[in-house]
Structures are given as structure tokens and as C-alpha cells.
Amino acid sequence: MNKSLSDRAKGQEAAFMHKEEMAFRVTARRNRLFGLWAAGKLGLSGEAAEAYALVVIASDFQAPGDEDVIGKVLGDLAGKASEAEVRAEFERAAVEAGRQLSA
Image 1: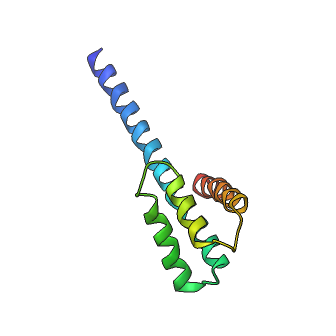
Image 2: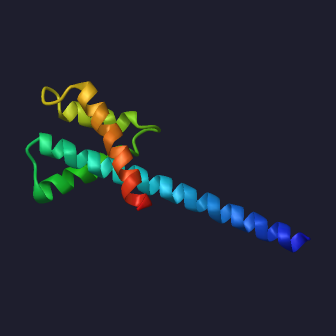
């Protein structure tokens, strides 16, 4: 009986770790897609757009939650996109990231 409990605990731990890893990957992909969108609004393309997307990804580590990423892009896009447009694109990027990684 102890072995089956141990196996079940290991299975639950593995499932939890997989779920956490997928959440991290979706968040990173969302931030990249969001950063690439913002880069386009800033007139960046190619390597410059990819570099900007990496900066957006890194901005997610400044504070818990998503407001650090949204705030970064809002500040950079001042006058080029409304807050509503930025937040809508952030949500669209989240849906797209989830779709890409679940495929």
C-alpha cells in the first residue's frame, strides 16, 4: 500500500511540475508575442524586433503579476497606442500563446 501511495504522490508531483512549466512557457511566449506586436508599433523589425521582445520578456521579472509587462509596453508606446489597445493585444497574445503551446 505504501508503494502505491508513493507512486501516486510522484505522479501528482510530476503533473504539478508539468503544469507549472507549461504556465511559465505560455507566459514567456505571450510576452514574446506581445513584444513583437509592440516592436511593430515602434517601427522595429527583424533582429531589432526580436531584441525588443526579449526586453519585454525580461520586464516580467520586475514585479509579480502582469502589470510590469503592460506598463513597460504602455510607456514605450506612449502616443502610438491607447491603453485599451495595449491591454487587448496583451489578452490576444495570451490566447495565441496558449493555442500555440497546446497544439
